[in-house]
Image (cartoon, rainbow, N blue to C red):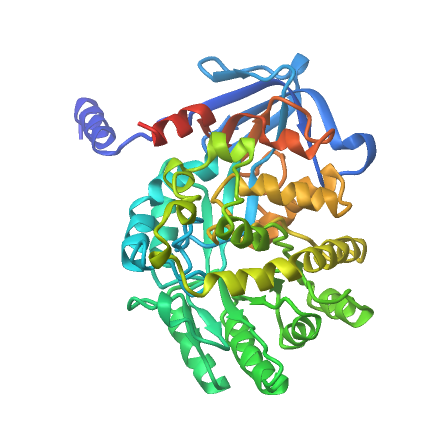
Amino acid sequence: MTSTGLRLAVLSLLAASPISAAPEITAIVGATVLHPERAGAAVADRGVTLLISGDRISKIGPTKSTAVPAGAKVIDAAGKWVIPGLIDSHVHFFQSGNPYTRPDAIDARGLVPYAQELARTKARLEATFKIWLSCGVTGVADVGGPFWNFEVRDAAKKSPAAPRVAVAGPLISMIDRPPLDLGDPPIIKITSPEAARALSKKELAYKPDFLKVWYIHMPTDDLAKQEAIVKATGDAAHGAGVRLAVHATELDVAKSALRAGADILVHSVADRPVDQEFLQLAQRNKAIYTPTLCVPDGYVLVTYNSWEPTPEEQRLGDPEILAHMHDFEKAPKEKLPTNVRNNIRRRLALRPGVRDVAMDNLRKVWDAGIPVAMGTDAGNIGTLHGPSIFREMRLMADSGLTPQEILLSATVNGAKVLGMEKDLGRVEAGKLADLVILDANPLESVDNLSRTYRVVKGGKVFDPTELTRSLRQ
């Protein structure tokens, strides 16, 4: 081949081979970077520049000596604070937070048919994703729902404006919930270890991030037989390299769940103070504890027309949900739920004591070195997707956790729940660029976590004002 022929062949080869474009560079300049996993003065690095290349942090260094590449997108972060993206470790996308989303608990189907409510929730998924991001939440764990949950995870991966989503399939449950069954039930009653293994196998085919047991124990139930069901589920999960999440809100039930292999307890122990046996079991399992302190209040407040949005919920919440939170007040009496008043009065009578026990237990669990992950149980009635994190974190502060501890629970420990601690939860070179830029120091007050200037997810920068404005257009 002549030199001319060789040159033409090379040019032809180059023309046929796509040349990937250089990754986009973003520079966050002059920030104070917070590291909630560190102790003492090392928790903050001041006057820092972060370089983001593509979807990862490529370099962090002093602004004075860190050059910003030509053509980089520059964010002036002088006087601002950078934290890892927040993670809510307990949500349910099949629930919306409005009064119609759990007819098994508050049966308002006389006002809005459940099929209509669920269809609205599915259609609103893209908006719900944006709400999470606008609150600085770049990752969520959906710990149980219909098989449709796996489509939610796929949709989040495809969406440019969505948090990272980890999911479980239907809850393997000790009881059933017929009002929620429209052909793809979120809760399936299981009565034997064999049935638990069969349902686990079906769910594992979808590659879930967790298997979830709804461990409801009544006084007449045989705890040992129920524990065998939990263990069968846990063994199936662990055999496939998947973790077991368990709903267990009583001390004896939580200890049973841990004996059966629970990796994540998705609620507080709320009936009695945790004891040494519980703490040792949790330590043995290296279990993660998710308090969900705010969720009981939502049911009570909505039913009695006492639910009022916080400033963050008014500013960041889904306007479609906010518009219906006082529907019971306006509804004709003959269409109101018949089972609401007695059930809610019982909740109301129990709530102050229950919450105090749960809050006291949170401090004990933290002091025992058990990882605590912030989670809201968002989607339940009165617990909104997104801004409910600020209610939850205030209750965590009321329980005695410091702002730094709360931030750690919502970042480093949340990344553990997602199974992404190698890539998320810290502001370090090489990590995925999931970040929040704040206008105020969250170490001074947990309230400052709501003062979001910009959110970065996978290197893409979002203005929370623009995200929320798009919901109202």
